View (tube, rainbow over the protein chains, first blue to last red):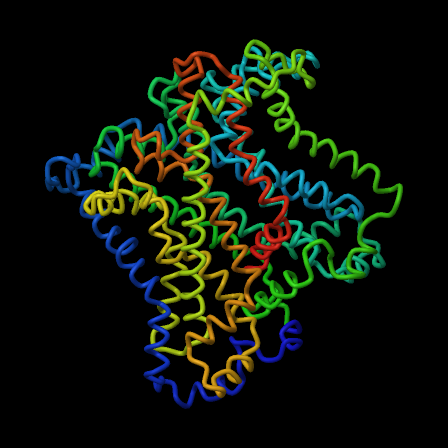
Amino acid sequence: MATVSAAGPALGDDPRRTRARAARRRKYDPRETRAAFAFLTPWIIGFLVFTLGPMIWSLYLSLTRYNLVDSPQFVGLKNYKRMLGEDPRVATALFNTFVYAVLYVPLAIVVALGLAMLLDRVTRGAGFFRTAYYLPVMTPGVAVAVMFSLLLNGNYGLVNRALSVIGIQGPQWLTDPAWIKPSIVLMSLWSLGGAIVIFLAALKNVPRELYEAASIDGASSWRRFRSITLPMISSAVFFQVIVLTIYALQMFDKVFVLFGNPGSQTYAGNSSLFYTLYLFQQAFQKLNMGYASALAWLLFVIVMVITVIQVKVGNRFVYYESERK
Amino acid sequence: MSAVAAADRVVDDVAETSGGTPAGRDSGRGVHGWHQVPFWILLSFFAVLFIYPFIWLVSASFKPRGEVFDNRLIPATFTLDNWGQVWRVSPLLTWLGNSGLVGLLAAGTVTASSALVAFGFAYFRFPAKNLLFGLVLSTMMLPGMVTMIPVFLIWKEVGLVGTQVPLWAQNLTGSAFYIFLLRQFFLGLPRELFEAARVDGCSYWGLFWRIAAPLSRPALIIVFIFEFQASWDDVLKPLIYLGNKTDLYTVPIGLNSLFVKYNPIAGGEGDFQYIVTASLISAVPLILIFLFGQRFFIEGIASQARKG
């Protein structure tokens, strides 16, 4: 990689080290090893106490009935049976969450990519627009939910007022079951700035010579997009798809504010029950810690399976720069 | 792209400040002069979509109770009452203080611990290094919900549920994503610096504290503000750990409690003017941090694009 040479050999690739490595493969300086583990101590403790230990504990809890007061009672696979067969709320929550993710992720990618490409085209004012698009990301999720609950109010919210100006009767965004998920998608799309900035950086990294060569060969702008831009930024797009999917499957703050507060009109009714909200309710409002642990493991498995599928499919299409040589 | 090159790019980019793309890069790509106008129009249209909700919020915060929903850009009746009253109808100031304190602790601890661990992975040779780093990366994939319940039980066991400690103390053990980010950065530093210092008798701690850390200030600042933002936004932890201790609330759940109190849909009293004003105030600190530290944000986020 050309960029390395400027700064001299970097920490990661001392040539002497690489050469010597094979020779003394198993010989480590004990002093160095001790020092290294001293530096790693915070993470090792954290991994044991806050990750590995809790995972094992959670697996055990998922096989018990536990309400925080009495000690956990072993019930075998009962929680899993209930979750997968007897509790219709789980299917409802999964369905809602999937619908949200399926709407949100592609829309977010397309809109962010479109805006990033527009930003990439202008020379003057790009900084201003980038700031404008990124500002919503700085607004806390709760404030976003609160604000949009007012803007999307079916009777006097700004959005429906604006729609009525052009002769459209807007829906009851946050109370009509059919519109709840599109509403959440809409408010999530507002905070899209991160993806825009990432795509913009990826676009700026595409070597300009490629476009020039293609233009000389008479390639149309669509052709240049298909054959140059898209392949060159595919790894950034791919990474965003994975990150946004994981984020969407765990959407919590906005749905909690809008539908999770006991007493709110739509208090997690069928169409506003998202998976993490249901998990939270089971764990911390109904104190079904065992059942909630099983729900958490189901979420884990789902996130894993979806990510693995995405990686498998993605690897067929993604072009990595390191493969260029 | 190799990890080293990626880290090096981050170093270069941060060093040259974000505003400029490399000279000559940009000049020929875009369309020129008047031909940019259609793009500006489109970009402006979207900018209005992104910015207008803010303007609506600012405007509504200066309207009296009955006029919040009139959707006028300029308030028909201009009042400062909301800005004066919102502090009295709720402990908003306390919540802001709590969020600030928790945010500083969360960001400070995670920056320090992640930097230590990242340096451990970047500089030293030791057995099982790749295995351990693989473990670090794999924890990034783990949904927080899986460990949420047992971690809650741990804090309950040590009697700290109902305090703000669980909101930040886990950060003392570092965070996988930041460890990854900082390791990339450290890997880009010239190795000669460290070897020269070793020859001069510098300790391992000295390598970290006197060389690696000062040279990585931009990356450390990125981690710090990212985590401050994450902490400022967090809903789940405060909900779980603070219960009904409103004096300990952070801004998001404080705002949520105001929303419940005043929103008629949730059985409240309909004082939307306070909800609006408090929402706006909750966003102000982060927006200020963003406007002043913009280059760190943009670089930090953009560097994720080069991860592949």
